[in-house]
Length: 423
Image (cartoon, rainbow, N blue to C red; front, side):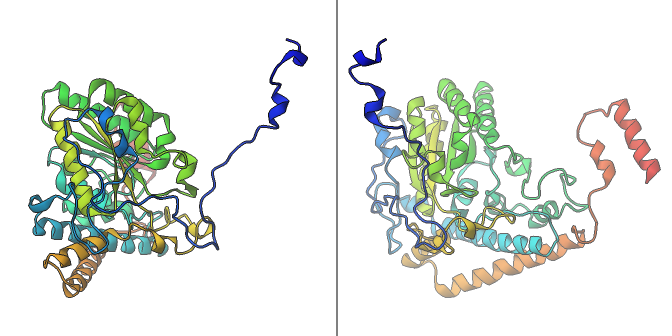
């Protein structure tokens, strides 16, 4: 084609521009969460669990909130009498112990007792809510910031700590990274370090449950950064096609290590909206509001149990701590950005609500804080007695050959015997 006859030559538009999303604030700046639209509590409608996904597309952009600024439960999503004061106190206790556990294990890493640790500070309500709301035979496919599930289900802290220390009582024999727990008896699937696998595993497990005619559902968790991975989209395709009884949780804590949520696509759309194209209902929920967490899980679980298929939930929260013990967040975000997070602290908000209904007080909160520290301190003392990285009491090297094959093949038996001769 003759360029002179082109009615709209490309040069008329100027050079193309490559766009890289930028966070709202960098180190040294004032925290800026103006990009986050926080609606008043109680403003978002609550549809029936049998609703057609296409009729609730607006909920992928809204935000379900129950607790107002004064700690009152308002709006159609408020659980009401269905969530007792005792149940809320149990959740609060689990969250406080989780936070004390995180602080102690992080300190242990700094002391050289373990190689690595990851805290869940600011995100405790999501894991605890799932643990207390799902059934004992449902299966949870977590990522590495859901230790609150195990603590809420009263899994022994000593057992968790022994894995952190990779000592002689580590049930996984030092083969996993310290924070990647496995507890089938607690409905807690082995954590995978390859991000996104837990979604396809959760969908597959849920499909198997339906094929078997069972009554159990699955719940999987990923971070917002993982929504850019292929496994995320594969999982949604299978979940939608086969109407798997699964809850697909995207924890949007604003940061994928040092990449802010806009790099994964959060600057142009919500992460909940990614479910719409698959025909999956999507909810976007205040993840620091425990009552909203409970309401969302109950809605999605009931939908799945009634054979209406999967639900994707984006939990809007904030990673208050560093990504891990290897990370320094002061290099990529304002020093105290978490203090300006508009959705507050899940522990403080639930405590405030309990106080508003006459079921809690600052004195009882202080007592709980001290009790949690004492529980964690006692567990740490016992776990350290079985060894830490400092004293070399690690898993027996011969365990390398165990729990791999049902019957150990001859070549591995020979290698094991050779190791025993050398030691």
